[in-house]
Length: 256
Image 1: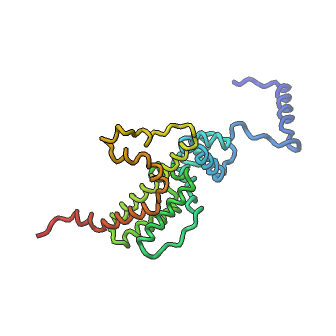
Image 2: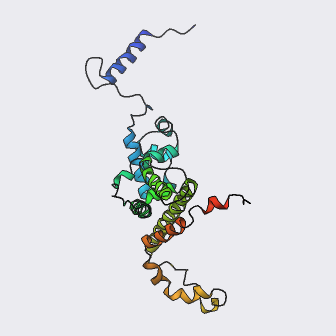
Image 3: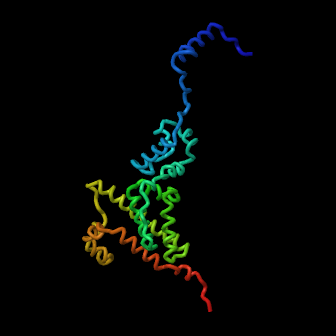
């Protein structure tokens, strides 16, 4: 049997509670229960994640970090976002729209180059997006028009659908690799006291084994500073288009 409460003690407790809450008709409203998470707005979550990515990169982003930044618990955050991949997808959403679509030439080869250069230029302004895209199959759905145009232009140039898809992948590797390298060199250049290893490591003693590199070592910076992305991507595209139909023909069995 439960012990009976002393009436006086119960009354004092009730009075203290009433004093703390201000009663039913006056005073301040009741405080929210401790531990109850505040309401989270999706825009706040995405903006916080994007800021972390922009300032510190993918490695710094975690559900725990975002939860702390928005003033909630990781468990509460999981009610809004399934996992880190979904959080990254949410941050990517809409980024492609920050760069209006260019007017594209009607010639399919020129259209192929124009779209690829637009992709390169857009991502060059969004280095954090380059890092996220490097994780694999994450993307902004609004950017898929570029993939559609590249594949379509490839087919219009005579590539088979399979060749056009592989051509897109090659061009994407060129764009992504160039941007990753440029960003890495920018970060290294921020340290004026750093030691430059290549091509400074090359000496006359390397001429026998590395004749071309040793001969060009003194001119390497000059030859790479004026690297023309447009010209090089154009050369890659011409090479890809020059293979039109060859893969399909190579897969055919010889006929009598």
